[in-house]
Length: 224
Image (cartoon, rainbow, N blue to C red; front, side, top):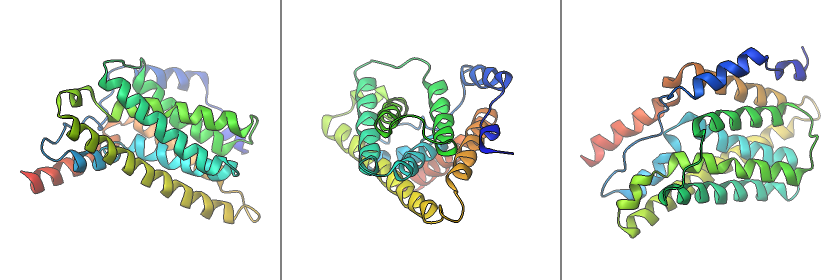
C-alpha cells in the first residue's frame, strides 16, 4: 500500500465526516473561564482539546518538513492568525462551520505530511497559518469580552504561550523525523497517525475532551 492510497478518502467517508462534524459535536475545549485565574486558564486552554494539541504539533512538524524560512514563518503565522481568530470572536465575529473546519485542518495537515509537496512552501505556510483562525475562535471565547481588560490580556497571553510551546514541540518532533529521512521517510507515518486521530475525534467526540476533564478537575481542586 503506497502513501497515496493511505490518504485516498472515499467519498462516503467524507460525507460521514461532514455530517458528524455538523451535528453539534461535543468537543471538549469549551471550558468555562476560570474567574480570578485568567493566566492559568489561558495556559491550559490549548490543552483542553486534542484537536488543538494535534494541530499545533502538526504545524511544527510541517515547518521542519518544508525547511528554510518556513521553519519559523509557519509557527509564527499560525500563532498570529490563531490570536486574530480569537479577537474576532471577542468582537462577536464568528467563523461558520467551525468544528468542520477544525477537523478538515487536521486532515489537511495529515495529507501535507503524507504526500509530496506540490505547492510552493510559501503557499503551504499561508494555508496552515489561516487555518489557525478556526482554532483561535474555539479557544478564545466571547464570554471573555465581559472580563476586565487585564484578565483578557493575561488569558490571551497564556493561550498563545501554550500554543507556541506546542508548536515548538512539533518542531522538535519534526527534527527527529527528519534525522531519519535518509534511512526511511517518517513524515508520511506522522501524517497517517494525524489523519487517523482526526477520524477518531470525529467518530468518538468524547476522546477529544478527556484532557479538558483532567484540567477542569485539577483547576477545581487547586483553585476552589
